[in-house]
Length: 82
Ligand SMILES: [Zn+2]
Image (cartoon, rainbow, N blue to C red; front, top):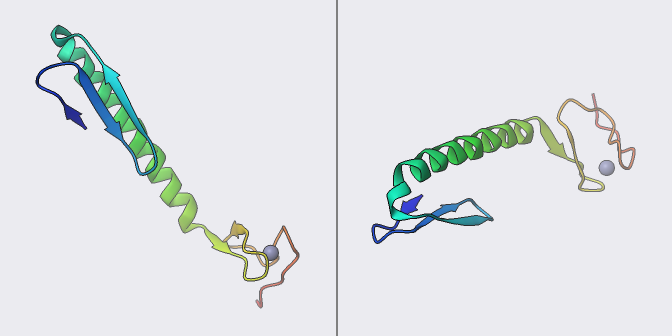
């Protein structure tokens, strides 16, 4: 997150996205609060995403993402050895 001192733009960036928020200079506090809220939401989403990734595996047959605990691929029927 960066706040341009000349004023008016706030840039939020993720791995594959970015958003620019413009604001009046006298509203810096409000924008900072908003940015903090957005960043909090982004890290919550990231944490959840990482959690989901940790519980999945890639099927060797069809390359779909399936649950780590699965014994059978729900896409192609590939069977994992027990
Ligand atoms: Zn499969």
